[in-house]
Image (cartoon, rainbow, N blue to C red):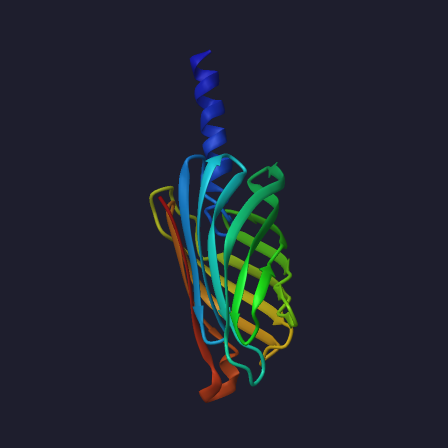
Length: 218
């Protein structure tokens, strides 16, 4: 009986921690907090949430962006994240997430703002894919985005080791310049964090845009 419980507990940890590796997760484990941030030329964002139970997290979020020839708009709000569906596959895992916030926009646009999104991701210890659609709305403002990511790890790593990944993202944002953003990036994943360093539209010469993504679970 003890051996069966040990194996079952180990399988649970494998499905919750090792396989996802926080490459696509929007929350941490039960009773944990997560800090996520994106810093780039075209938009900046950070989110801090807390997961009181598995599959649900509540927190705060702020994002800053600007349209073509416009001053920037900052949206601050309360954020909710939830798992709609999870599939534990042989040596892989797939998820459907809901994420969204309600709050206030200030800057070029002002007033009530909302940012619902749906995300699908699937990954193993070596391969990764994500597709996401997000509404970013306020009065007279539409910065809706859609993104796909695909990546692979250079080698498998142990639970306490840092694993390097190559990730390529294609993202579109309405009323933004450029409307299409392609970002190749190097992602370093550990059990409690990931760091991602990329360059958006690197072929633009002096117009290229470095980007940093980071996530910490504590």
